[in-house]
Length: 218
Ligand SMILES: NC(=O)c1ccc[n+]([C@@H]2O[C@H](COP(=O)([O-])OP(=O)(O)OC[C@H]3O[C@@H](n4cnc5c(N)ncnc54)[C@H](O)[C@@H]3O)[C@@H](O)[C@H]2O)c1
Image (cartoon, rainbow, N blue to C red):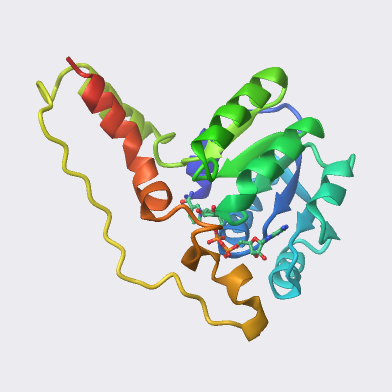
């Protein structure tokens, strides 16, 4: 994601949005760099991570933000209007659900939830909090380029779609070097089925957008 794409896809509030980041790992801090380039739209007022070695560099990026280890405490913070959730997949549903209940707007990283049941429950809860925004972190399909491609498929530029070939190459390992062996499951959560949904939700889900459009094309 680049900052212009982020700007194009942001709900434009007249006021600067006070943002709390939950999960200041790779994705959380990567997006913080972009968010900091839009000071007219966001102020990062709070940060949360259970691991010091992830929280510390985030605090160095935003020394003025309040630091939390327990995300529920961040959700109690009145100086937070919206949260950006970038934690391991198994935490997406409980954190987004609690954030909605706490009255916060939510940008929840993809994949949306660990299970389909949780996704259905979260959509229902978002409808019950209709004054709040719940957005899932599929930044590419939100881009004007993807919208144009979707429009071309819908208008029949491709004719009748009879086969879809979709690929995503990834040759690097998801295994991360450990600062301490006792942190294996927290740091390498992608290696464990109870925390991670596998390649399909992690990588294919962002391509499903086009697949569903193409399938619907008469
Ligand atoms: N949209 C995209 O293009 C994109 C790209 C990369 C990652 N992601 C998604 O972002 C999410 C995070 O991925 P990542 O690569 O940053 O993982 P990561 O392991 O680097 O970061 C996750 C962070 O969450 C923290 N965490 C774990 N439990 C916590 C808790 N209870 N409270 C607070 N913090 C907690 C960890 O300490 C870690 O710092 C994943 O869902 C991933 O799929 C999306």
